[in-house]
Amino acid sequence: MTDTTEVPAVEKPKRKVVAVKGYVIPEKDELSRHATPDAEALSFTFPDTGDEYLIALGDIGAGCVKAATFHGLAQKLGDSYAGKSGDEAVEAFETVLERLKADDWVRMGEGPGTRPSMVADAIKAAIEKGGETVDEERYARIMEKVKGPEARKAALATPAFAAEYERIKSERAAEKYAKAAAKAAEGPTDLGDY
Image (cartoon, rainbow, N blue to C red; front, top):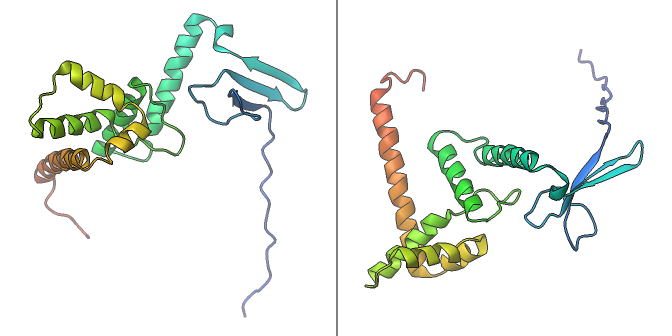
């Protein structure tokens, strides 16, 4: 005999909200849940008391702003490789770091995206294939042009640049494969139950 008694679902107790926090973005009617380069302040509201705090960077001591910046960078860069390992983790980390250095804020859910230097290298290679030279000054101008994700996307819409970009990606993938194959050759030969 089978027991068909239904067990009522147990609701998880809702976590009490101690404070509502968000970022004040100009020309937005509500707080943003995510920091952006145009944020003007950080807002904390305590629902139980109604106390509200708006904190701008100028309100905080310079040393603490520096410490908070490093704390935020550690979090941002750490998030870049979450759930990844090995070369994939390093690639995601380097891509986000490069974008941050280019003043290109990586938005939530966007992922690391294309690396500015890879796009610039692809443009340089395509230009050089066409018989022109790309000196350091011209390369710096190219890097400046591909700072933002939309600029990189637009550049890669040019077939010659896209082809060189894919070549560079393939070469890097081949290097990763060679590295992994060398590690595998050093590892165990008995692969067990697989």
